[in-house]
Length: 178
Image (cartoon, rainbow, N blue to C red; front, side, top):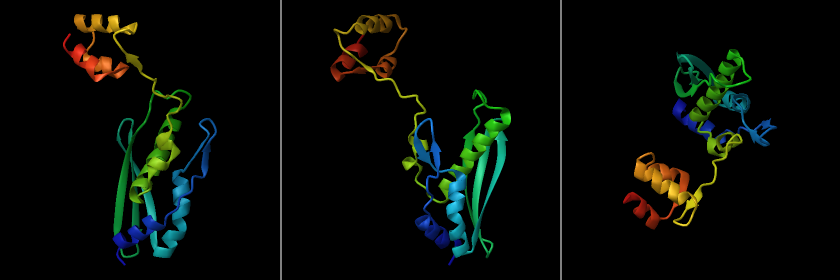
């Protein structure tokens, strides 16, 4: 069996549990370590091994590469590129790089083993930053006069108005004619 067939089998058989819990967000997620732990029996079964390497592409940008290889010398790799939030409060510089490294490893493994991250709470978590609900703009709303004034003065565009308000198609046509 060639490595592509083996990788396909591993992708189908791999079940990486979400072994970590975010106490603040109250959700479970999987870490790179969870994926690697789930891979060990499959690596043994298919005579493969996985190596993760990292490189600094630029200041604040890490690339993680996950590579699966077999005993015949074949290998297949997948990458993940992550930015390092240098403005993250409460973390030292090594912690910032370590956090980005963990994230990059997880996503490189996810890319290689076709792990669907959309089902992962990490992909769905808004970290307390829910998008504010938009106000509906009508001709009778208190904001309407301000919007018209801003459009007439050029201090706002129709696109900006749409990003801030829910606007009916009829009112949108009227605003575009201002």
